[in-house]
Image 1 (cartoon, rainbow, N blue to C red):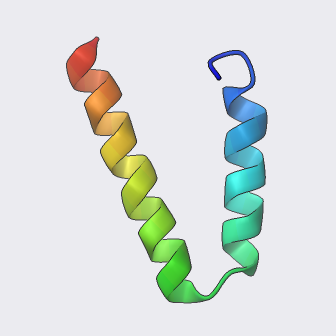
Image 2 (tube, rainbow, N blue to C red):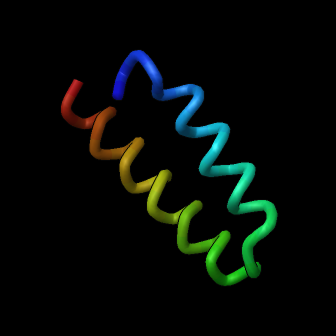
Length: 42
């Protein structure tokens, strides 16, 4: 996951751009929460 993280994020945000706005906001919330968890762990 760490090695392919950038590719994965690109695919996620590319699909999010095509998704309905509510689904896009849900994925944005998910990634923000995930980033906060990883920052607090480091």
